[in-house]
Image 1: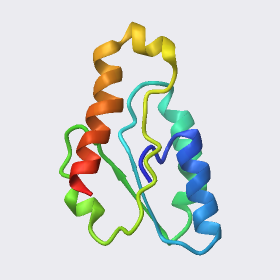
Image 2: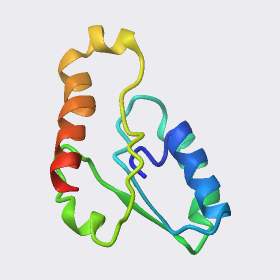
Image 3: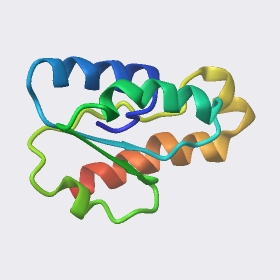
Image 4: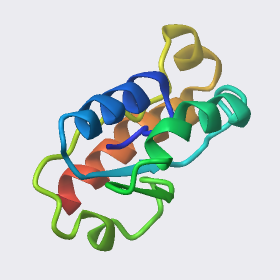
Length: 107
């Protein structure tokens, strides 16, 4: 689960765990919104023994070890919102395009 500490990623992780799946979560904690909110989003999943979390940046990290044994990838990591694409274009492109490209190449 990329973007595991975000709203969508954290809730989807919780549902998958409740359905009996093992989940590997990944998040870079980019400062798009406060880290404390993201940590609260992760709290339920982190309490589940079937959940493993890795704090890493899809744009830079070695992804093969994290993807080893993973059957399905839910890619929910992104800088959301059109306004950010105009204000922080380079970071927006890096987080949304480069990260996705690297994930697809690694998978």
